[in-house]
Image (tube, rainbow, N blue to C red):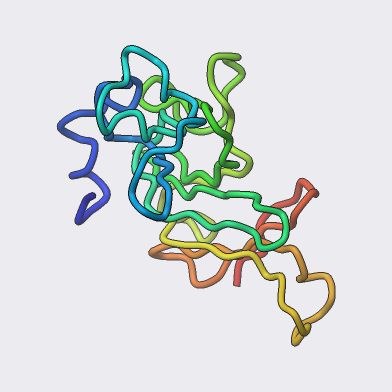
Length: 173
């Protein structure tokens, strides 16, 4: 939706929380473009027309996402404002908190990110999470410990990985 980090939400950050706008949302559509009747807001009277496609909300700039083959697990890369870049686990009807919160939260109304890293100018800080992929190859060409790892990129960090199922700092190279 946006050409740069600030332009997407700067003019309408509050719309990430409402069901009357597609800004700050993940959508779910059938292959033919129709909206699945089991979408979480399909029968919500607040979500009308195309807004019935809303699957999750409260995202700032959900720039990219990946689906892990074999599991269907979804990771959403959300570009932060001034504090955090986020990797959110995609869950139907989740509210990730933007524009009320950014990064980790203890507020039960919002789903906290699975992983965050700081924005800034330090060696382990980034500016915009730009993509990511799960490493689940049919034939392993790298060490076995990489299998199941989520690798992500940032506009300023050369290489990052996030281990699956373990809390650890990213491997930054």
